[in-house]
Amino acid sequence: MRNNIDDYMNDPDIINEPSALREIHAIRLRIRDETKNLTTQERTTYFREGAESFFARKEAVKK
Image (cartoon, rainbow, N blue to C red; front, top):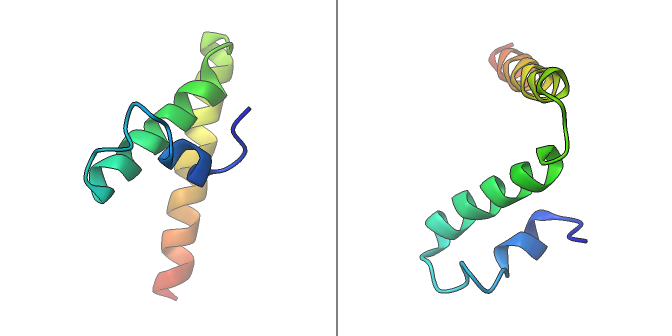
């Protein structure tokens, strides 16, 4: 089991990609692993909470 983003960054399928692209692919792999067995409702909640957290941090930075 992969525990952090660095584990995903070293995935053999993306290791030869440029750094920025490899990071994007690693994030997508992590999201896929975190949501692969979720129901539709659980997946919706996962993404809603992630979006709310993102915007809360964005507002905190503005202040």
